[in-house]
Each structure stands twice: as structure tokens, then as C-alpha cells.
Image (tube, rainbow, N blue to C red; front, side):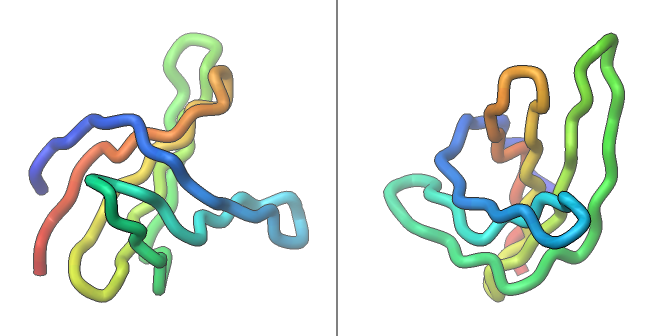
Length: 81
């Protein structure tokens, strides 16, 4: 996976049970619609929780990270199929 580490604009919804689900994100002037979330995990760094999402738009696999303290999103990496 190629590390990107760029802030991104993202649309997400809270599903029943207060689970966060990314729907689409903008990267390099292109909107990527998320077709599937393949894996999720969380990481604790100090007092900050980071929520990681492995998602696909059908053409590539992306790692999106939500910083719960700053309420910001980061595209952490991308792997082309």
C-alpha cells in the first residue's frame, strides 16, 4: 500500500448503534463513492482514538482514518487493484 497521508473531505453517516460509516470522499479533485468497507479497527494514541476504515470504490483499496479528537479525516494509503 502506498502511503498518502493527505487530509480529505468525506461524507459519512452514523448507522444504528452509533457506528460511523464513510459514504464517499474527495481526493485529487475526484469523488470516490465507497462501495464496500472491507475492514475496520481503532487505535489509541495517548488520549486520542483513531478509527481506521479499509474501503474500496471498485478500482482501488483505500485506508481512511478518522481522528476523533480533531474530528478530521485523513487518506492514509491507497493500493491500486
